[in-house]
Amino acid sequence: MTTWAADKDVPLIQNVLGYESQSLNGAWNYIVDVQEEGYYDYRMNPTRWGFFQNAKPQRPEDLIEYDFDKSPTMQIPSDWNTQDEKLFFYEGTVWFYKQFNSQFSTLNSQSERALLYFGAVNYDAHVYVNTQHVGHHIGGFTPFNYDVTDLLKEGVNTVIVKVDNKRHAEDVPTQIFDWWNYGGITRDVKLVKVPAVYLEDYNLQLMKADAKAKNREISFSAKLNQPKAGEQVTLRIPELKIEKTFTTDAEGKVAGIVTPSLRRGKGEAFSLWSPENPKLYQVKISVGVNTVEDNIGFRTIETRDKQILLNGQPIFLKGISIHNEKPNGGGRANSAEDARTLLSWAKELGCNFVRLAHYPHHEEMVREAEKMGILVWSEIPVYWTIAWKNPKTYENAKQQLTDMIARDHNRANVIIWSIANETPHSPERDTFLGNLAQYARTLDNTRLISMAMEVTGASNYVNRLNDNMNKYVDVVSFNQYIGWYRDVNDAPKMKWEIPYNKPVIISEFGGGARYGLHGPKNQRWTEEFQENLYEQNCAMLDKIEGLAGTTPWILKDFRSPRRVLPGVQDYYNRKGLFSDKGEKKKAFYVLKKWYEGK
Ligand code: GCB
Image (cartoon, rainbow, N blue to C red; front, top):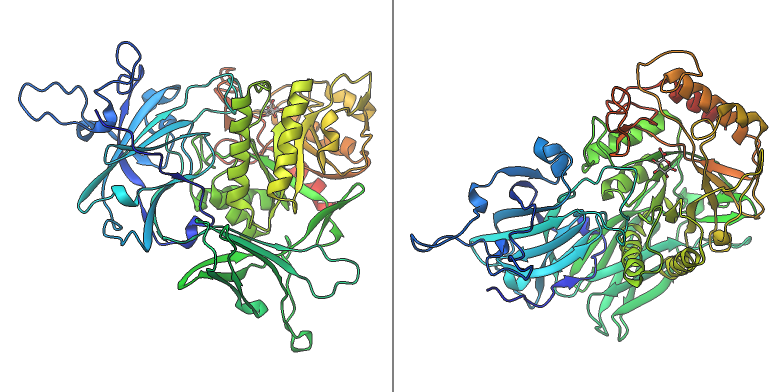
């Protein structure tokens, strides 16, 4: 039986796109393993026949009951639910297998390393390279990587991934959630060539200007993948005339402040990133002779009383919530093109902001939004009835938060980290989320923290937000469904009281309509019903004191196993302003008009 190698897990590399890589996307063979026959024997002990061994009969009498090479293939990245019609509702284990000739099999391991990188695998993944176990990852929406340098060989190599997307009460997300549990290797897979000493992380942020500050300063920090003192790390931002060399400390870290040396008289202004001006600067960071490049924008984000300030100026966040689904039909979105289509719809609606619900979306969603001047709310799937008392659940949520922030903390457009959605109140929940919020600040104290709360226990027409988490968040956000889960005629009578001196975002409102279904405005599922709901809600929101933005629910109809009504839902949540095929419903124009006036 194969021995399990030491875990090859290494912390997530910053800016994986900045390195030479070999894509392992494409056709992978797969075996659907309903009872995990390829993993456990008939006593539920690890089996000696494990599929990860990719065994082949050596003699005529040999018993091998699987064969990857003869198994069907599917394109990776993808979700198996839309790739194989038999797997539409499937939740369980599927084994994936790929053969490849490594471009990086002859590295000098003293100076170069190869990382095997996954953009995301939903939900529980065991990874094997050339039959050796390299790691185990849980969490369906964040990237991870392994150092596989010593396992690669010349000629044919194999990678096998056991993916299990069964839901469990103690997982993050938990057992129930209102979106499709798409399984599989849902984002890019690649081998990445890195120097033996590389930048595991770096961080560039524009510092908040005090009233007098004319020259804006940029804070810079970086960390090597090894605690190596005395390494030279050079930061260059040519357009800002910045070039500075730092020397690592005993932990392999550097930190400092750099200032653009521009001459304004010569028209050399420091251009801050904003929706109107999504300026990105080319940044080069070198460790010795190795350089990584990124494009980074600079802006500040803060709050003052009930206002959100971008670059010191109040901004109203004209947003929309989005699920990470393909623009046409269901299925996980996973390309830059998918991202551009979805985001261009948001732009057409007049948005300067998107809520990427309810989990980290693929990296291109954030990067494309950054180029298009769209601000982002990014979230982890701490959703509904999480197992608040379970320490492993907390560690899982914390890891997903860590990796979300690690991947995107150099993106200027990301302004809010959201730690939860619609969670039921209890002391255990407060402890869990309070700790998570405080932890998020230790990772990134430059952005705003929020979470989608609920207003519970409204008395008559007075809704008073009362959530112990108010002290941990910078922005108070809540979901409300007047007109859908409560009568639309209540909207004009509603009073909203938010007793906290913080900006307010309505993180969800909306209602369902089947595209093309028409009728009177009180007939549920018609476009007119949804249109009226938006009209009433927009008028109601205008009366909320301190409203700093909104992200209605939702851009596009999305797949959900909870939405079963035949002929209407057919396993789609129909609250989209666009149908699942990208057709605009009437409510789209109501919101667009409202945003034009903002
Ligand atoms: C919510 C949830 C969202 C659901 C939505 C709905 O409050 O946050 O995930 O999809 O309501 O459609 O009911």
